[in-house]
Amino acid sequence: MRWLAGAASILLLASCAHTVDGAAGPAATAVTVLPTEEEITSAVGNSLSTFGFQPFVGGAEILPDGYRTEADASPIDCVGVTDTAPRIVYEPLGLVEAARQSYFNWDEGVDTSGADAAVLRLPTADAAASAFEAFVRQWQQCGGTTVVKHLGVTGNTGADSTVDATVSEVAVIGPMLSATVRTRPSSDAPKARYERVLGVRDDTIVEVSLALTPQGERALTPRGQAARVAQVMLDEVGRG
Image (cartoon, rainbow, N blue to C red; front, side, top):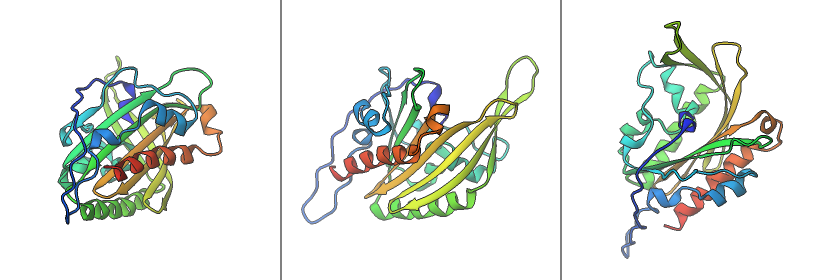
């Protein structure tokens, strides 16, 4: 979710790997799995744009690295639910390749004001399946938990700024894992709602976060919209 403040990146182009007869080849390279502006707009029901920013592409080093210890966020084990593809989550998994992209819409009256999409390729399909199973257990354990994130000193007071992120409605449907995350600064500011979906196919895990406006929170199917974005990405994995 922290990506929604902006993005700047280098685009590395790569094509799908060739399949060798008699052996399973890797899925589509990570950057080709990211949704286009047209695809994500169709999935969420209002336009979302990259505003010309190119995706981040590389290894674990391109993933967000804001939280490392309980001093940064507590409980640290639940940061993988509240934030999209943190580096701390994927570094231990032997990540082969990663790509991520942010999309925005600040117009009044839209349901979805932003989205993050991430593609994480692991060494094998078995490794991805094992990681997904571990994520299911972890997200379920984090249901009902509030993660307190320390953002550092802000303003003129010298005080530590914190954000509370509460995880709820964790669910598993086939190859997809979903949750709702509601965040609020530790002041009287209103809450913000995000819909999170994580999916797996072959050697690839995809992650999606949708940032909802107050109008979008009243919609009937915001989680379905996040799942549609994830499905677009999983379908692209199958074409690799």
